[in-house]
Image (cartoon, rainbow, N blue to C red; front, side, top):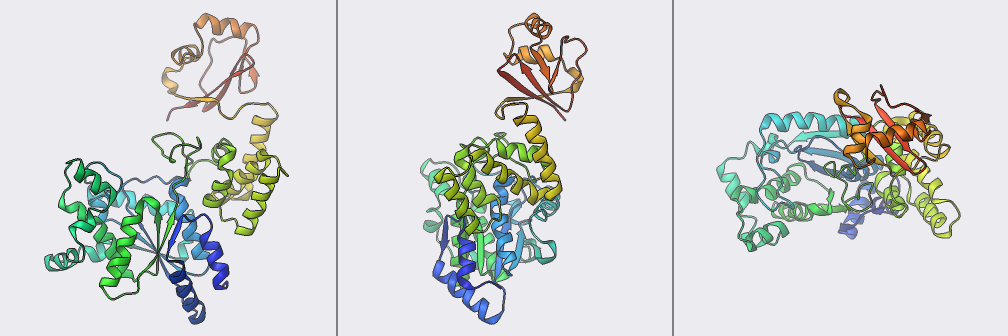
Length: 402
């Protein structure tokens, strides 16, 4: 086990806030002296089954704590998931069925073990204890929190001031997920900055039940590959942990240079000393940002696909995008193979003015598909991935819709 200060250095990498660092230091000292791992909690409500690198920020930090020798407990919120976390919502969330929750939970488990060590991870479902609470237990639980305190929560406060409905069951969510901390006697809980109220409620509730309060570690939200908006599947700026090695490598290469350090901090397990060396290289201009980004792409791809596939993805990237000078930020279209017509697709997306323009461009040698010149547009079939070059400067990627 590493020393206390070495552990704190690793834990603090990329973190927004720790409440409280001194409490963490004391817990780590006891853990170190007694050779007893700390219990680290992460609660997951399986309302959406697909995990991308934005979700994985907290999981990577959990993995670092696991590698430091601490006990990781993942709480699958199969009970609280049926209420739905109201965090950040301007209206009441629609309840999902238990079958949906359990189906999503199975998918979640498969994905989290792409990051965490399955043999060293304890997975528990909070229905094991929450479903057993009777009405008296629930009344005693709600007596630990005032309405005024609950309305300090930003989303509830905004809805209350805007005269939008808040239903009583929504107040149960932060209390119930906080009760999870009481049940497992959590020493540390992790979450995104949007989970601040929920995690601090866990600290409060543990004290009410005469337990030592958990330390809370807050991780930042990760911007997507556009470098602007929070990573989101709906915005199309995400990198899925189930993306192929080639797609993952390519997507990481498309992030703005300004995001390189943040991705190293939040998406890799790089040691803080290695990260500081990269920061100096960027600051002093000792290395081309493109080369540093290639290291980042390889590092991230290796985490999810292994060294061999990451190396293949890098070789492909060099061959396709550097040697052929194809830009990364080309427009991407998804097209169904059943109705594919290249001219119509380009016309509908305002990339050409007419079908005759495309025919003329092809006969003049100005149409290239996957690095091969096409002199005729008749009979072109959709491939799973097509990089179209029109003239010298216009590039479009077409993907087969599945």
